[in-house]
Image 1 (cartoon, rainbow, N blue to C red):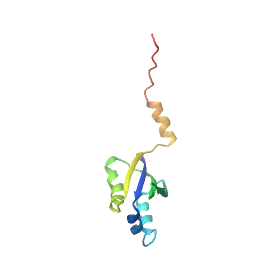
Image 2 (image 1 turned 45 degrees about the vertical axis):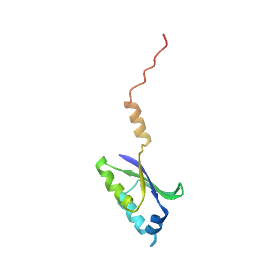
Image 3 (image 1 turned 135 degrees about the horizontal axis):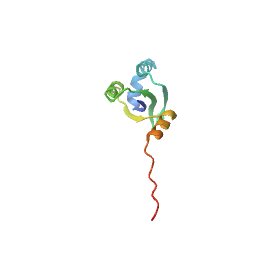
Image 4 (image 1 turned 120 degrees about the vertical axis):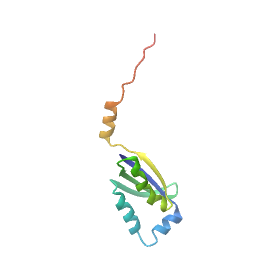
Amino acid sequence: MRFLLIVHVPTDAGNQMLQGGVKPLEDLIGQMKPEAAYFSEHYGERTFFLVVDVPSADAIPKVAEPLFRMGARVEFHIAMVLDDLKKAFQNAPKPQISTPI
């Protein structure tokens, strides 16, 4: 299942992680194999926006634990591509339209 991960890294933890350069971050991101990875600030913190495939719920800790260990706050949001959305609407029940009596 595809997720958008929003990873907020507090300043102190980010400073410590990047003290020797971006190699630790490269290694961490490389282990996750994201479809996309963007780096910015959000609410005044270093923030990563990652699109990752998590095959099942029991795999979430494997993704989240290394991030928690570096002091990050992690949000998992289900993410769909257009084909997923089309499939969802094909399978969704049609709304019942009631007419006034």
